[in-house]
Image (cartoon, rainbow, N blue to C red):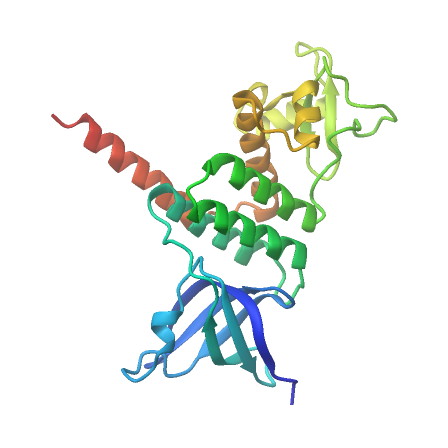
Amino acid sequence: MATPVSREPAYLLHSRQYRETSLLIDIFSLNYGVLRLVVRGAHRPSSPLKGMLQPFQPLLMAWQGRSDLKTLTNLELGSKLPSLRGDYLYSGLYLNEILIKLLQTGQSAPKLFAAYADVMGSMANKDSLEPALRVFEFRMLKELGAFPSFTQEAGAERDIDLYAHYYWLPEKGFIRIDDFDNPPYSYTEFNCNIGGVARQYTIKGSQLIELSQSDLSRKETLLVAKRLSRLMIDHLLGGKPLKSRELIAKTRELKKYGASRP
């Protein structure tokens, strides 16, 4: 029988009904990464577990089992964080979904777990949302080995030029473009893949240097970081949609509709 795990720091990412009285939960843990556990009897009136199983809160979990699907045996609350609301809540759902979809089951990622704890704390404190999200996304991309050099040109033994323009090529890095009227073939292909708006996704060398230093103080650089992280994450997703993005888009449409009504 596998050794039971006790008092493992973890966060709940997602939960759903399992049979009549139980739950299936996806968690992100310090030493075991993303895992799926069964919570038996969680829907019974006598069970204290369901009320304690809240996302975005630090938890201590215990589980055991011989199969891939372990059974939760104990749960403790960590330090209580304020509940997420509004855009912070939707952003939390987004982060949880990309962790489930992009991390391998059972892949230990303690540095990323620390980054997740940091971003949860930032959002609970209502810190500026966009920089916090970008910092986490970049840390996740580094953990997945999908983060290119922001200081070296791809395919060339030279540093990023502050005054040049670049575009990101999956599996390669940042390619320099000197003439938009006569671009490299890979740029034309990149432009086709993103619907003919590649010019919006070109990046100044000076912005890449700022990103290499985690400097998101300028609005323009923060926007570049958002566009770039989305390109990279979408590439890893391989075309799979994110339900959280759909929810965010619908919520924004409803807000616009409400604001436009007399």
